Length: 102
Image (cartoon, rainbow, N blue to C red; front, side):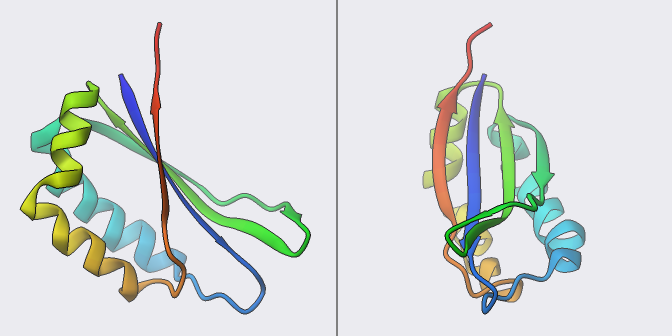
């Protein structure tokens, strides 16, 4: 299993629409990336901050394997997923791939 960790780091001046993210963006991601092996997505809203910066949101996108994750990130269908970010935040997503072993 491979996981795409997507974090949004900001400060008090940053905007992030949780309602849109939960009800529109995440379902859009699920529909778009399911054919590439996306199994599930977990979303977290941490409360702690460090030096005025904090993780506003974090999503873990669980893929069946790394090859599927890589195909999803480079697929033409992923363009609209990236473009949709502007509909809920002014922050730039930080993407990190994490490979899990059992």
